[in-house]
Length: 99
Image (cartoon, rainbow, N blue to C red):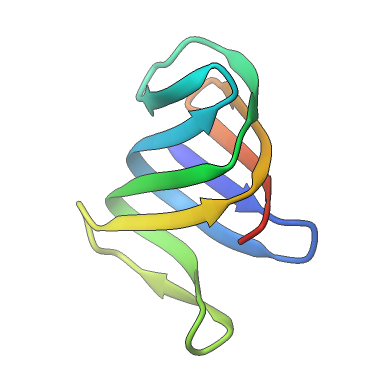
């Protein structure tokens, strides 16, 4: 499963993942491989990504740039103030604010 996490001014994560937990407006939910198609608004909270085997790029706040890694099972979290999620055919798109 692949994910793209975008803010209005940058891409903060792209790559292969095992799962992602998001703060949906009706409560937190998790997206796993072969999840049913969904579009949902997101509330303020934490996005938790668990990486899968394969390449992924993530925004490193310390360096201020995108870095590439291949770690499987790495947990990456982002605090967001809201946004939207779309899941379709094992592709997850997060459009978020507040990172």
